[in-house]
Image (cartoon, rainbow, N blue to C red; front, side):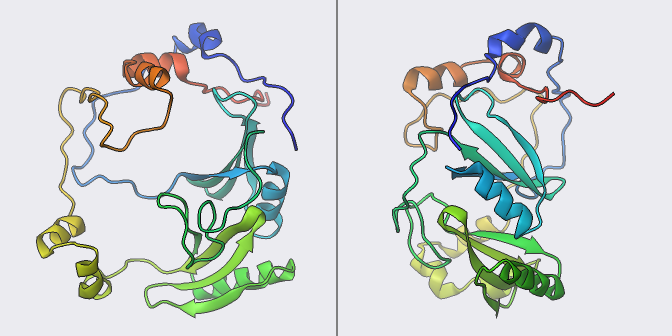
Length: 259
């Protein structure tokens, strides 16, 4: 499927409407041990949205929940399939997406081969029990797709299979890893992690939200950054949070709710 038009709205066109939406910072202070509790969505590049949505619906049983022009990105589709009401796999289709994999660079191809640092090596999906895992194995094979496993990894049990556009996929069951049993001192040393550093990694520092919002730090090329042209990066990162909320948000769905 090829995009031939772009109906994405310009953020400035929504300014009047969005200015009526109050920036929702209440200043509330959650518990200091707050950390992300799950993956809301993992975005995967695609050159064939229909094939991906069909695979995830038919083979894995994940319903399509959203399909729309990606906000603020010309000629680009965004699709979401649901794992749970707060967890999704998203797909991003733009005409510039390459279609041929580069093994060891763009794709690993399985759950053990190399791929460029920072890229997704493989994607593991969760089910609640071994019976559910075996049911997923049978559902996937029912659609003609080979499945490797189940394999018992101790703290989880897994099956492995391929997805469209050479995705390396896993379904697994398990939870609550016991770090005292699953951190290998040999591997710890090979990673250059001291015992003091390991203790900190196992028990992250708590953070109490201050009364005033933390100011945007200056750009530092030695720290992780989003990749944008310099002028766009500086404009986006220099914009006050409330202004970003009012001018760059796209909260309205493409289809009006039924009355």
